[in-house]
Image (cartoon, rainbow, N blue to C red; front, top):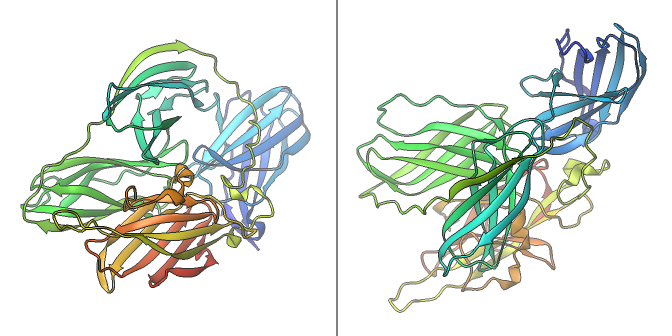
Length: 507
């Protein structure tokens, strides 16, 4: 069954020395998730072209999803046109594409996205930001200020906007992520050195560093009117990073005459709801900035917005926010820039991108709930109970029925028997799969612990620390795995055991 995805035609003016396209039509087949492109290349170079090769690559942010088979055109006379077809199988939803046209020792790069799908010529390669090195200097004692010397370079042909260092410190066996925006941009052909100071960091056994940058801007919802007597979000900005993650920033403004707490916001990112809980309380008239990341940014198609819920509190407590990291640029030097050329295919790692196997069918992936565990609390000397921590065991299976590692976002509404307890979100990063579930105990477990049972391949996810010893958990849960789908369960209770099932909403 064939369905028209995009249909665009007409002359698209380009560089006079580069071929142009008079037709570029996307067609998606439901069978095998195949994407076809039927196009027409116009030779406006002023000379005959021979052995023309065309290859399209489909991306989610800066992550390659799939590439087409290379199409060849034997000969195109000066001023003539030639038809071509590009074919790619198992293509998930993509946010942009690149089209490489090779002829006579020259490679031309064209690109398009959801808003401008017709191929547009790029005269330079995109940004290519990489971490050159990082080195940490420890404080005299912990907690203390750790200074990292971070060197990054952009050897691409375009600026890397808002370069961001992602630092993962292993503290008490668990990964503690710190994200730091290094600068407004790093120019092409530049290598910059920064000193990043992380304040009041606890002792850590190791750390890892990587970098990313802003790849695409999302919709900018209009601010509410000034002086509105509500709790509102202002200056909301949503961006997609080159590593596929998303960053949301803005500020909350309490325009009411009451103090509020338990502020839960649901941000609409495209067609996906992303929940966020603001820590602490807000006094009347208070405005507080926020920033948070999602591991996999949804498509911006569908716009953006927000909705907020809160509870009135008797008195607002002063906020105790940790000191933000500080950054200082200490050096810069010029490096070479890469030339436009067809990049090599990515390494085929089924855990990182399970659809790289052309035989894969998205519907065959499955998620199951393997059981419920809890770590019992204890009574302190003052008679206060520390609370029990409940963990749920999830299993994610590939199309061969084998456990696989993925990066799901888990949203839950939790109940104690039939009484609502609260909403919970767990965003699973790839580093969490390195945490050993067998080492969880009453001394190190937290209500947001996520770890891997390496023998079974299960993901252990903590979702509640109780207020007392009498708690009967029940939950409604949704699991979203990028490019694979959405799984939902209603009324999980008892042993929390549900057989693995395929996605309720395939991606």
